[in-house]
Image (cartoon, rainbow, N blue to C red):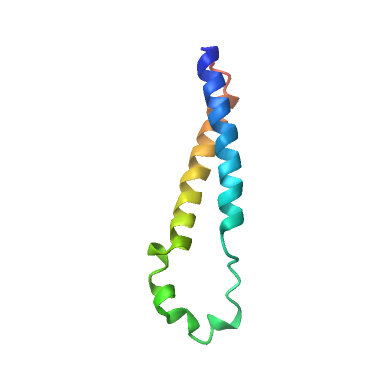
Length: 79
């Protein structure tokens, strides 16, 4: 069982580093007054889920879920 704990710990460390990089790659969410004036109705605003920013957001969500699950499993001392 020590091997499983070691593997999960390594995955946890790699996941935390990857999560840090992905969060730093994302743009700020400060839309400012452009969102009020209707500037968000552009092509990129409507198709944001398909853009690189949308992929980064989805990847961040997935990595956060994995991070929390692995942290909980490592904290239970099952291994």
